[in-house]
Length: 288
Image 1 (cartoon, rainbow, N blue to C red):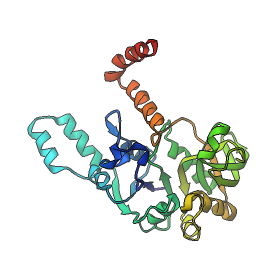
Image 2: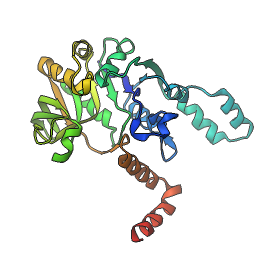
Image 3: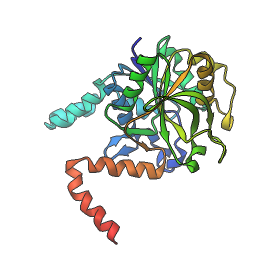
Image 4: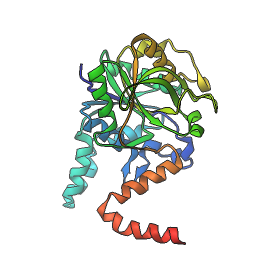
């Protein structure tokens, strides 16, 4: 069965970006002039996804509004003859079907994914975390979908990190299957320093079978008192197998202030209208 649906958990409070996120959902913070959430949705669309399920929380109505039509704005742009901006605004609403489901209480990533069950149904689906921006060709989630369709097992994105960073991620123990692929033999969420089974960390992209839902429902609270997706994935691994895919591309942690700044600079440098001014400015800045 093809992967047609994607779940994007977006219910977090974004406390690392206060005070801005007191009024603005963290997913709406822009990378240059494009909201972070749009990069994630665009990755899903470019990977063949037809339906996007946003798992939101209180105060996140702006996310739903962003992907909806804006008749007043469209009329204003049409009257002013700003056809390029009008086309861009309409394109955002028409790219794919976006629906929202509310996570009524913040009980962890696993719980957020479980909240999407009524919209996903009994079919495989992708999960894309809104904090992670991937610059990859083909898109990161497409790479995982290809592995899922070929091997018929759940697939998670992996990145080799330093020993000092392992305590910030879910980390796997695995056996190499092929270049860039690992059969996962175990996983642990945010291991204490010095106890990680490897340096292969789980990044924010997954392709999962619907079998994960009852496993999440049966998973007790774990690290931080939350229902961890990693714990349910470990149960899935024991039942039917999980493959780790070392994706090809660059990942930016847009949920971290430094990672967010990195993404802004890198994407600005891709823009001809900005790069010509930004490059000499950065050179001068470094020289001060």
